[in-house]
Image (cartoon, rainbow over all chains, first blue to last red; front, side, top):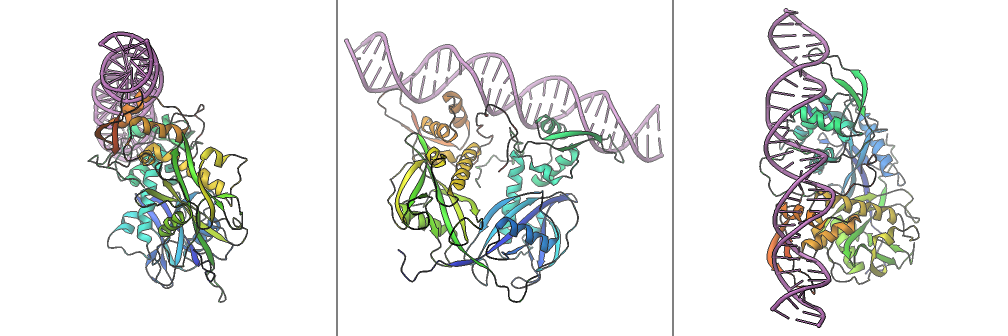
Length: 244
Length: 244
DNA sequence: CGTCTTTACTGTCATATTGACGAGAACTGC
DNA sequence: GCAGTTCTCGTCAATATGACAGTAAAGACG
């Protein structure tokens, strides 16, 4: 099975980050413009190789994101999205990348650094557009990230991770509407989220707006799972559905 | 940022498999007894290093499983479970492992081979028992695999992947009961699965049993997602739930 | 053959959740 | 005050669920 001359093959290990936010009325993803070859000048997910052979994957993810975009992951939600390791995904050599998915609220703008020439929020629709070219297999990764976000907010309270620490029900509803790209009924949405124990904690405060009745402000509650789930409006045809 | 003497660090990349089945009235997982150091003689998930630096991850997973247990993944459901890469998880050196999760029906028994001294189905409860020692961080991986299976059959039709090509509603119900370790009402279960379009396709045939009315036989239908989900009976206390 | 036992299946009813709206409440600007 | 806006509560029918009664179809047994 294993001949005597065989040695454990080694591969270059990278981490990439799909950092999503909701801002300016759209689901957006953090992309950088690559400052080095290959794919120099192309848009790509922030990420890079382990700094040394003993760096933990999570640490590498935080470090790369901070280096290339200035964003800090501390305290924010992030999770593994998947590992992409097709043999030919990097023209230079074999590279396997562990990709992380993060949901962040609309915060400070990014600052480019590291191997990135620039870093910016890009609407997900733009990133996924046929005409947009992304480095490596990053378009596929972005697709997976968006799909994961869409399904994750169905059965978890993570949509609130896109909101500022204090937010209104309308803010939260807008997150759902923009991530799913589906309009939701404000009244039914209100009933659902306020009726789900542990989703929202009322602060007592109210927003002051330029017009319209002030809205109550909420903070994220302790619940992480939504039970029963928030149902995404079914697509026109109840076709045969697909699994991850 | 990157000094001139820096080189891309390389790590040993492994794939492991968490292969689950339902047999003998229990959820079981395929484990091998390690034939080589480290952890020689201990139980572990089947898996191993890439055979060469250009092997695809999925191919490596199929190959390792076939080598160590004789099972063929072709045509069966398998998906990435996650990547485990804590710096100290292997005492020898840095090893990052991409773990796959597979659901297989009760089929041929395994045959040991490769670096495995023996291969066998082990009840999940045994594998997770405090007194059972598994190699590396494999106990954590098994926990994740079982939890993933439990939640996956809630909103997908994957429970049917544990059944033979033709099965009865009672067979399918038993899968749910054993994976969740919760009794389900046969009548309500029947209504749910037969009422979900695309889950089951009646073959017209019937089982012949030693006693009791014969049951209708079904095949897996085209649907992959369950909508609405099959709800797991809530645990005693509707506590604050957790996200992945 | 009948009845008994066993397992499969159909049906009913109260309750909970959802989708679709009506309508009132609370602000700003004029 | 009045119009415009937006938030929030309420109603009602449709659907899904949990609990449980009762019928159907086989083999076993006398």
